[in-house]
Length: 174
Image (cartoon, rainbow, N blue to C red; front, side, top):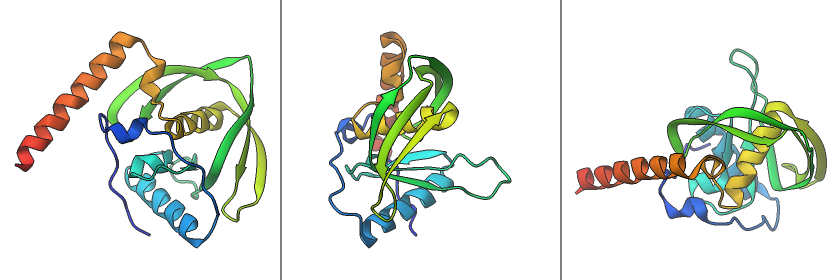
């Protein structure tokens, strides 16, 4: 397994819509394992393939609490089938927008169809943190960031901050 570099805002790749995974094979499983290793190293609880520069509809999640055994989950070509009318609010963060957090309102529950690591079709009903995390990562696959769910003013401030930081990093490299 290999830890991959994370794509950070304002990289335009984060706005790209990811293509479906055509075939679940050893290469896809290897990418999923690399994504999990990268996510654990960051550390985070979810990661979409686009965040390591791969525009493919693949995401990983592990909601195990600190001290518990890891509980990695792999979702290939995830598709939200239904969502509840009830909403919940969680403070969200993102490995591609480090050290920024904001409260985001999303449907409290969803039903999801996806392929597992073996390419078998699965369906799950998710609520709570799992539902929020799945929606956050699926947004990534659609070129949407969690800051798109906050006010325009706050979003513009965050983008400006990260654009300035990217320019500063770029000038240090010269």
